[in-house]
Length: 314
Image (cartoon, rainbow, N blue to C red; front, side, top):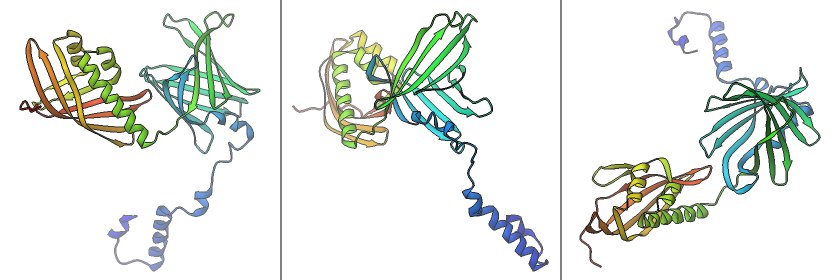
C-alpha cells in the first residue's frame, strides 16, 4: 500500500484509517485465515500411503549394501499429495505426485524423469500393500503394462515392479528396491570417511590404478595446478593408463579434513617422487581436495595444487 505516500494530504480521517487497516490486513493475515486448513483430505483413506513418507536411502533387494538412490517422500498441499524426489546414483532423477482420488475411489500416481519419461499409475490399497498399475510405450512402440507394489517391511519399505508386453499373460521383474531410513553420519564419521578416501586416491595415483581413481573421481572433476593448468577426470585416467609416470613415492602428510554439511575439504602436503618419460622428479606441494556427498557416498569433485617445491632435504 505504499501508493498512499503520493496522496494529497487532504482527505478525510476515515479514508486514512480505512487504508491503514487494509495495509495491516495485507501484511498481517488474520489469525483465523492462518488457521484455515484443508479438511478435504482428513479421511482415513488419504493416509493409506503414509507408510512411504520418509527420508530414505534406496538399495537393490539383491544387494542391500550398495545405495542406488536417495529418495525423499513428503506430504504437500495440506496433506493431500505425496511428493517423491528420487535421485539415482546412475544419473536418473525422478519426481512423482501421488494422490487419493475420492471421485474414483482410487489412488493415482504421476511419475516423470530427467530422461523425458512419463508413467501414470492407478490402484488401491490391498491388505497391507499398495498396488498401482498403468501402461507406457516400449522403444519399438508396443504397449507395456506396469504393476508396482509398495509394502511396509522391517525397518523400511519395499517397492517392486513387474512388466508385461503380452497383455498381462506373463510378467517380468523390472526392479526390486528396499527403502531404509537415511541416517545422518556424525561429523567424526564423515572426517574419517573422507580422510580414508583421499588416502585411497593418493595410493591409487601412485599405482596408476585407473579403476580406483575412476570410482572416486566425480564425472565433472577438475584439477587446477599451481601453474594454472587444468585437468579433467578423463585426462587423469588417460595418464594413469599410459604409465608414463612411475611413482616411488606419492604420500601426503599434515592432512586436515573440514566438513560443511555435504561438502568436505582436505588439505595436505604431498611428496611425489618417481620418473616421468625417463626423467626423475622429486618435489613437495600443498593441495586442497574438495569432496561432495552423493547418494552413493563421497566423490572427489575439485582439486587445487600449489607450485611444486623441488628444494628438498630428506
